[in-house]
Amino acid sequence: MFYVYTLIAIVWLLLLSWAVYKVVFGYMLPPAHFPKNLPTIPFYYALLPLLKDVDQEDLWHKYLKEPLTQHGAVKIYFGGAWNILVTRPAYINQVLKQDEVFPKAGNHIKNPNSILALYTGENIISTINDQWRGFAAIVKPGLQADVDTSIIIRNAEKLVDLLLDEQQRNATVVMPRPLQDYTLANLSEALLGSSFDTLGNPNAPLSKLQSEIKPHIFNPFYLNFPMLERWFKIPSREEARKLVLNFKRQLCEKVLEGHKHEHPKGMEESHLGCRLVTAYRSGMISRYHFQQNCLSMFLAGHENPQILLLSMMRMLAEHQTLQQQLREHILALSPEDQANPHALAEIPLLTATIYETLRLYPPISQLLNRRTEEDVMLGDEVLLRKGTYVGYNGYTTNRDQEFWGPDSHEFRPSRWGDNCEDIQLLFRKASAKSTFISFHGGRRTCLGIKFAMMGARLSVATFLRNMEWKLDPTWPRRMTPAGPLMPKMLRLQFTRLEKS
Ligand code: HEM
Image (tube, rainbow, N blue to C red; front, side, top):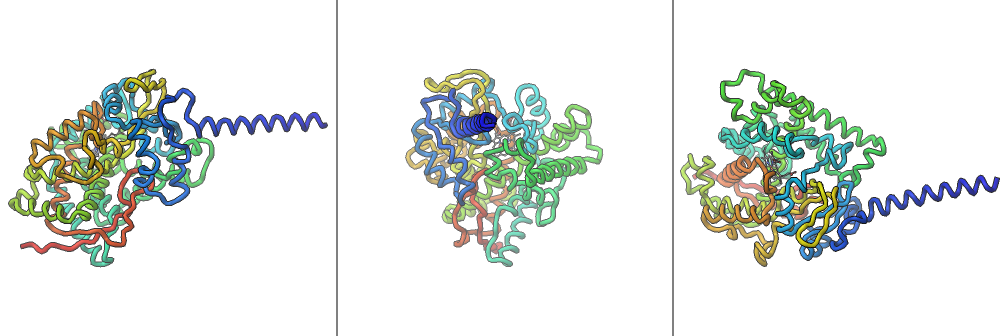
């Protein structure tokens, strides 16, 4: 009997040692083949948002700033895997240029059974090679076509009324939800040709579902440990799974609903919504790919503009002189030009303010979605083995002191120049050198820049000519703890400007 007990005890001990080995070496330490000459961000960094109320900017200063600035790349645990996080512009330039060596490998590859993968799936942003080319052929002309800008002006004016009403009721306005509803209205009506009915409608199904899904998707615990969703059936995650499926179904129905009519001849050529629907109905893409591409347009098309507006409104609240200067530039235009995106694009300070906000607060501040296809040298000294996940931290790179100077952490729109030519020249130069990567770069540069810039100009111009705003003094000036970097539950106070 003694021998049986001893044997059982040995088996248990072996199993326990194996489990400890797996946890310690499999998850808590970077794999042995990772480059030895790069520093490691301690594993517990991933746990901090779970343990206390943290601010991503504070975490960056405490844990990332020094190793990233010194080495230009670090080993970091994120998204259920160890990754190489790259910030030196020359390294990023290489990653973006050598697209075949560092192909995208998004959530559907990294964590195929996670809710994030179920949500984003295979779409124009996540896929590569022929599949990407096929999706791009459908989406790109739709995003490059001119849209009806009167839709955006009308929505911006409606948002102004909603914000001022809210101000009257509560003496402060919590900004994320109204800006989510506003950017969704612009995307659905101006690009997808199908109203989601979000503005001023707290019960709009897609907006409500989106607000319910976001905390699940950006839950720091499952962002870092998606394997738990694979190993266990967790009731809250099963609920989230249902929410995601329901959301995708409703989104598809809404887009199709907006396109029941016969399209005027030629319309399919330009309108993004029409192009997606036509591609699906003609069998060019499957129902699944129609769904995932609608979803990627939904996310890229509203979340990034929403975050940009949140950050920019915060910056203008903190820099009252700049807010007033911009207002004067806009009011100096004729009433027609105040709503004309081409005339607004001629105001250098407006473009410079948008770029400077995007530089300091890139809406996608960290992106780890590429994987090496073969062994490769990063620069001259860092050897990356095949199958290594690689990504960047735009928050750090966009503040590179060698390129932007010693005041690179300061919000100073004038650094971009004082005329449109210089500003665009610097934009192109910084993009080419990968010192401004808010819109990604290389072959896979954001395809929505035109829509995003036009929307930002028209939105801010409409807000500036109708209202003044400042920070609610009780807002605690904190950034989000994980996920997209933005002012957490930003609160502003508005005053209506009387028309002269
Ligand atoms: C301030 C606004 C925006 C910013 C900062 C931004 C930034 C980015 C970034 C960083 C990427 C790379 C994403 C990745 O690799 O996972 C990207 C890709 C993309 N964005 Fe944007 N984006 C913005 C607005 C938009 C809008 C309004 C749309 C259109 C609805 C859009 C459509 C796309 C598409 C289609 C891609 C994929 C390009 C490709 O891989 O070929 N973006 N964007």
